[in-house]
Length: 340
Image (cartoon, rainbow, N blue to C red; front, side, top):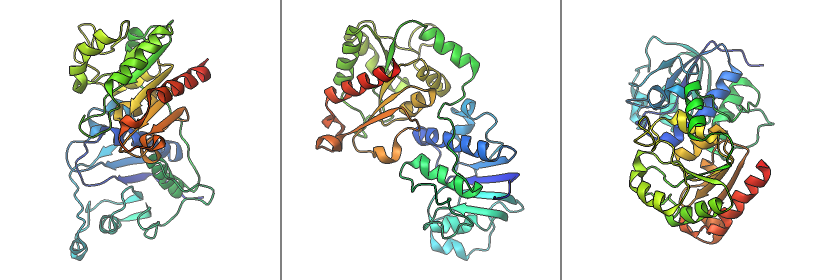
């Protein structure tokens, strides 16, 4: 069995840390590190500049990250290897986990004194260990990260898919979606709307009205970036609920990811594009219907066993609009049948 490290350095990369969805994917990786090495102190290098795990996502990482380093830049040009400079001079770690795959950065990171180094770059050629033989070859991004933990610890780790959230967020979610009704969530956004990730809004409206006709309560999960849709959705879906947009305390949309995660725990099922919101709802426990156009469901699907993915390619297209409303409606019904 691999020795238990007391200090762990996790290197994510040197780019700006600005991808909410990818950070949500990394949460189960953090949970796996906690489960595998409960006594270790974790130093996290997320990228150059402000870190989301030290900002908007901080409430979801309490007790998981002990130190954040946001001023380390490792180059990618081979000439960088000619320098004798040691990254993080004076520091030493029991375990270093390199989550990226650029060989120059991997070799530079190996210069930090360590007892054990784990990296999947070039098929783990620079790594002191590989995942055990019983760990299947991963395709999902989260499974690739969990494979690194398995290599470091010598065994597979599958953390629970529910994110712990602060009590005040759970209470707020319960107040917004009280006990009684069956709530079906709809998250029609996807960060920037010009990426081709957004399934047509009129189809979300049609599905929401269908659920309302069946006696369920449609719940639209909208962040500040979807404010322009609010009035249209209110008028188009009678009886829909818009958490974060009602009441004096929540008049600007859902800005706290921990609250969005908590709302996921109140939903019988949810439909979302490939987005950070989809990962948040899944982390809260919502059974997911996840929709994909240009992005790869096999790589970016949320970490949950309760998921049905629909890709444009399954229906002979590349644009997300190729996914028919009927297929999404069937997936919703299948989840609700499981939910009981």
